[in-house]
Image 1 (cartoon, rainbow, N blue to C red):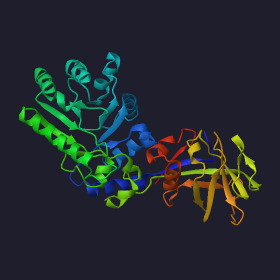
Image 2 (spheres, rainbow, N blue to C red; image 1 turned 30 degrees about the vertical axis):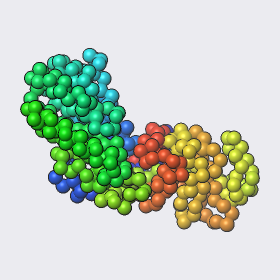
Image 3 (cartoon, helix red, strand yellow; image 1 turned 30 degrees about the horizontal axis):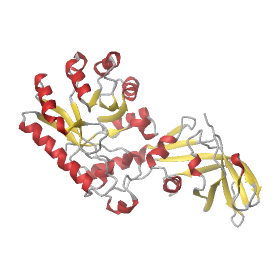
Length: 375
C-alpha cells in the first residue's frame, strides 16, 4: 500500500457523466458496465453509489466471480447483475451461484443454452441471448437460428427476456459498413424470432461508442462502459461526431521522493538509458508496480505550469521526471505530483504516447495505490 500516492475518484463527476449519457438516451434503460473492477475504479463502491444515488438498477460484469462479489458485498440492494463472458456453466457447483445469488448469464453458445434450459438452477432466471452479428468473438450464430429456435420451443420457451449483440467497430463512424451490417443482422434476428412465435422483451446493441453517436437507441437498453468513467470511445478522426462531453472521473497523484541535478548524456536507471537533456530529475513514487507502465517512457506531463518528461526506464516502484534546465519549479521532496487529473490533458497524452487505450491505462492502476472517493 502506498501512503503518498492515491487514485482519487470523483463521484460527483460520475453523476454528471451519467446525466449526460441519459440526455442522449432519454428513453433507454441502462446496463452500467462495471467489469474489471469498474474499469479500475472499484467494483463495489462504484456500484453502490450508482445504485443508491444514480438510480441505476442493472449492472454488467464479465465474470461470475465479479457478480458473486457484488451480490455478497451488497446483499440488501435489489439490482440485476448480468454475467457477460466467463460464465462457468460447465461446472455444476458454479451453476448454483446463479440461483442462490440471483445472477443472470448472457448465453452466447449452444452448449450453455442447453445447460441453461435443462438445469433447475435457471428455472427462475431470465433468458438472455447474445448473437454474433459480426464481432466473431462470442455469440450464437445466425446460421443456426432454426436449430436455436427449435431448442427453445422444445424446452417450452416462448420468450427471450433480453436479446443483444456487440458492435465490433463502434469506435469508428456508426455509418461504417461493418456497423451497418451488424445493425441490419440484428434486425433480421429480431424479425426471425418474432415470425417464429418467440417474443423478445428487451434488446440492446449500443456500447459507449454507439451511444456517443446516438445509434441503436430504438432498442430498450444501452450498455455504457468507458464513457461513464469519462474518456471517449471514438477514434480522434471522428471525435467531433460525439454527442457526449464526459469528464474523467479520476486523478492519479503521487509524491516526489528525491530530486537530482543531472547533465545531458548521464546514464539513469535500469538499462543506463542516457538523460536526453540537462536539468533536474524528480523521482516519483510510482512505477509499474502501481500501474504506471514502462510504455510511458517519453510521456510529457504538465504540472505547475511546467512540462515534465518521463526519462529512463520506469521501474517497479519509481519513475524519473525530467524538468529541463531552462525551467524553474518550486517542487520539493515529499511534495505531491499529479500524473493526471480531470483538469488537464495529461491522461490523453499518456494514452497517445504510450499507445495504450484508455481502458488499459485505467485498469492498470493496481491495488497498491489507495482509491480515495470524493464528493
